[in-house]
Image 1 (spheres, rainbow, N blue to C red):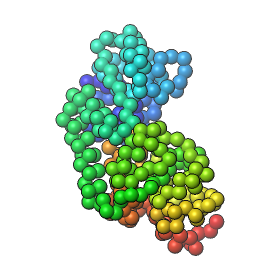
Image 2: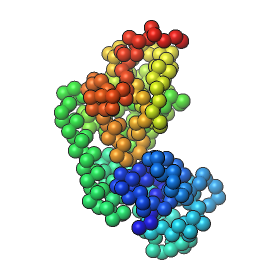
Image 3: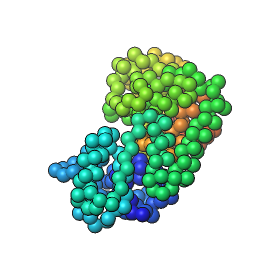
Image 4: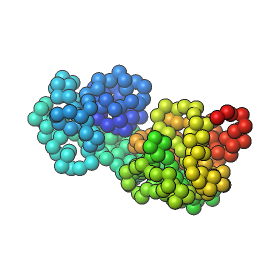
Length: 298
């Protein structure tokens, strides 16, 4: 089977299913895992042409014809867009190319997507097992630590320039912990948020988890927030419930990396130190940073 994966999350799932040898084309946005850089990129930034998926990027017609995929996996969020894209692919290359699309916004839809990608790639059992692995681990953590994680009001940010909240299934992940993600409803897209709104929300738990490559800049992030008006008055700060991830967590893609993201959520809501159910030194708690502040210069 020859597969085009036109969405970064789907590409990650292909690797989780151990089907990477079937990939003959990926989106130029596909950046994980490391080996994906060896796969031909078959999309490009927006220009005059035909859209390949809901993010507005474009499939290169010459590569569609040259690579001759059997299957194209993408992430349109509307049936009309899927139909238009399918018609274009079939008229440009072959009627035999199968096309599947997923655009999950809720956690249950993420599970269904994982199973669906497996089924589309003739790996139905592997897809089912991956989705069950996520479900089982999430349930185990919640059941074991329920008394420690329940009834928290959580603010989660994944960027500071601008201040940004991750959305879609993240509210479901927090709700699984019998807590509430403030500032976003279930299935809503991530968005920018003002510092004034953060003050008004006044969360019990404040989480900052930048996506991308892990880095050791927690002190810089801490100093940024410390300078904001009313920082010391936030409930989360007063209670020492402020946590800074070292990066590398991914909340925005419907992949198996949500396991690490959920481990971070559970750990912070339960008040655990890193290394208990997460990797050691994967995050820091505000109270640790405050104790160490005298070591640092401005």
